[in-house]
Image 1 (cartoon, rainbow, N blue to C red):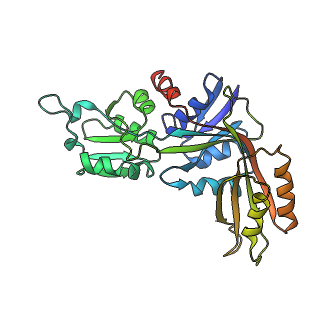
Image 2: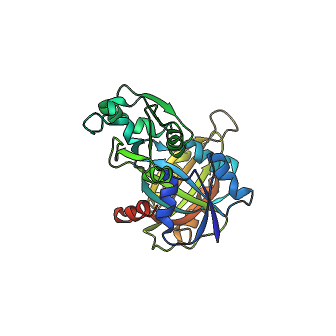
Image 3: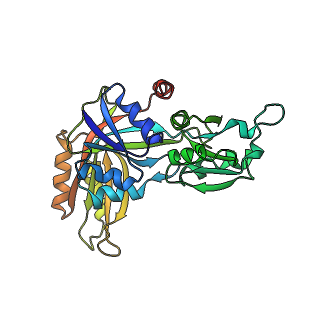
Length: 299
């Protein structure tokens, strides 16, 4: 049985991997910190790790991308999209008025991951502007803290999975400010993983590091893809951390490495004096809304 490392039980990462795997048997290993999730594969504790790398609202998760580049040498084996749905969670009995109606003016504190809090800013300002905001290590950790502190008026922003695990109530559902708040996850490991679903496409991720003082480097790199009509879905520059002003380009191509054209493009780029590092060539899975409800209800 494959072992998969991810952030704590009840986080969006937990919901996301259950969505991807379906009925595929595996052992989920939960870690408090993302650094431990990365290192689990390197240390042999897990076969794969689940890494969030991009979000609709916040864009690239630069810290995680830098870990993939600088801290570990592990290939991307799959990617998938999953909605980041946050809910206001707490002990309902603390927030009802004399008529038994929900009264969020009684909320003293709202806790969550520092990324989740600003994603729900509109809801908080509209319904609980008096509440203090406090960051936690993860959305699941915030829910657990609320569980162990009844009677204080504390709430958390987290998943339905976390609320069910800790026996708390959903005070308000889907409180993120944008309905299209999705997170892109990658599964990293040393071997491809067989998944039950048919992929919606293929993607290849690379790093291109041009030589120093190379005028027009990016233009020439992109030309190698353009004249071959290879579609790029993402390009981002990041510091190499070796010298000030020295950057590499992170590029994603909507093509498999098995394509005839893609290796030829890499050869052309290398002929320019650039270094090309392949981070992975992997199947890509889109989100299907109908698949989410059973994942939450089975808990």
